[in-house]
Length: 271
Image (tube, rainbow, N blue to C red):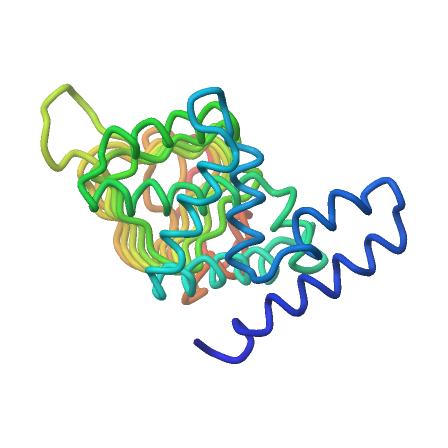
């Protein structure tokens, strides 16, 4: 694990300590969630469990489940830190690590999905689906536990995001609220989108069917994408059409949802 990922826990504690000094009403909360925890993994497990608990799976049960998974999966521990770092780097609303860790439901939903995904492939599928239902009810984000989601993912605002069972999302992808990676028809099998690395999918976009979104592509807000999108291209509209090239190698990192003039090639605004 790289040095900056290893330092996230100490940064979180420093930010929590500063916040507790500035806001007395949150002292107990910050003590419970971060300052009183022994590790990043313990803090994450406690925080997510306290949000997702219900009468079937109480907080202590979920906490122990999450912590057991984290302690056995080094790769998962790293991926969640990479996700948190991605939020801090790409979301201007995140002044540091503390606010996304505690308050941003995109990060919380994505982290909880990763536990459900582990359970799914550990042949504990009923529990994985139950956890999916808790995530959907709590955060308004519905990610099937069988979906494949890479690292360095930002789900900004997150409300209404849906990712289907056979969807594949590459690394360093950014999704805005109300994005759907969905299927078409009722046939079973491979029916959901495959999204390449560095892709930006702007607010409200719907990507439907077993189609490929090439690396470094940008999908404009409100678009409905029904066909493959070539790498490093920009598509907008209903149905979405190519309007030009995306000159950023990874538009997900820049988070620019505008369609800049130098991207447009023969763009008809009436499309």
